[in-house]
Image (cartoon, rainbow, N blue to C red; front, side, top):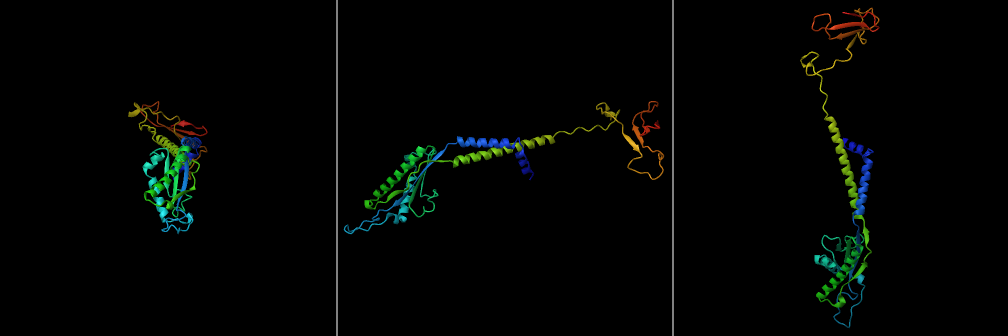
Length: 306
């Protein structure tokens, strides 16, 4: 909990939060405009049978009835569409269309499962979906046209190789013709959003680390050395000199917080008595050291030494 409080505190600081947000927005905007734009062009096709069906009459004088090709979708057409999709995804076919590995142009050929508009009906119809993504709009549209021609040629070659009657050839028609290339901004938006997040994360991390290091440096400051125990004239007085206090300690007798219920030595005095104790030798005596006790009244009367 303290960690998140510290983070929110850093964000709220005027010297950290607003500059970091401005830097992140600037970096995200720069990445958005510097990242190249991709263009996408698509095409959707469907396989159909001829109006006379997939067989020839054994008696030419008794032709079969005509049917609507859109009512003749079957598993056979879906199998044929699957064969075409597999053949179109071969590396040599991609190179023929001008798509190289790790290049700036990508091609996708499937049954429409990557197209939201065909996702619900792709399992019921023999669709062939072509999608080309490139950094050039003209290249994207050109590769889509080449892919459509290559699918039609592949379908005709396979039927001829199987010696199918010409009147029973499966045809392929456009459901959605080649679309005009459109700019795809999802990649640029993703890169800009990632840059924004990374800059914010890095900035907050650096600010938090600097704050913690600063606090650690303050707590590591050495404490002041204590005064030596020896007084003036002691063994340690030669190495260390401790200054005497400016004012000697004063003791007031009797203490103001203690009441005397009986007779005391100064019961008749209305003024408090101040006792001053000094650790100084008498000037008129030969003693090495002694205590001087000075009694005085707070009003300044009857001062004497004892």
